[in-house]
Every structure is written in C-alpha cells, then in structure tokens.
Figure 1 (tube, rainbow, N blue to C red):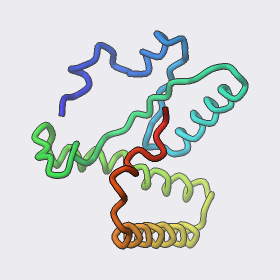
Figure 2: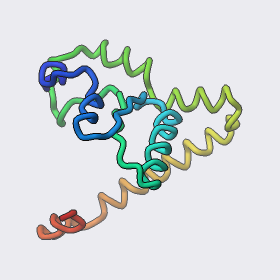
Figure 3: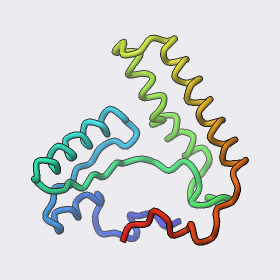
Length: 142
C-alpha cells in the first residue's frame, strides 16, 4: 500500500531500462490501440535480433491490493473520478465508434459474447475439482 513515488528515485520506472542497456518506452496502459502499437514495435525489434524493450504501461489500479483492503490511502471519489476518465473499455468503444471500426450491433454482439465466455469460465471453475497440491509446480519456468 506504499505509493511507488516514496519507494523509488525515478518518476518513470522505464527510465531504469537504460541501466540494462535497453530502451524504455512509456505508453497509456488504458489505451489498447496504443499498447498494441508499442508492443508490436517491440516484438518486431526483438525478432530482428535487436534486443529487448522495457515497456511501462501507465494505468491506475481501481481495486485494493487484496480482498478486504480498506484502501485508506485514497478516497472512493478519487477512484471513481480517475476510472471515469481512463476506463479502457470506454476508451476502446469510443474510438471504434468514432472511427467506424465497428457498428453498434457488432459492439453489442461482442459484449454479449465476452459476457457469455466469462460466465461459462466462472461456471467451469466453480464445477472443477481442486487441483492436487503438487500441481502447484506445473508449468513453472526454470
């Protein structure tokens, strides 16, 4: 629950990339189009063999650090104001509608499809058996 500004000496975490010999890039983490563009460029660069890129996607955490976090470090009004201004789904919907990338019906159909997939996934998880304790170590990198 400590703001990063009190625990680090730089305003932008991406500034630290230079110490590792790589470029650092900042992107609006709430703009899916901008994130796509920056990541695409970084992936192409890496695939050419030109090394990694450190990407800092600036965003705002709208939920607490843990379930039951009393969030005494900010107000509900602050959270709501920032969320209303930066909601990535609203930003996406506004852009695709303004630029005629999707029709209103396509947007509604997509929303319904996503909601159905989420509902099915939650139901699947609720009905699945608990994993065996040793499965904790499956799919870990060495």
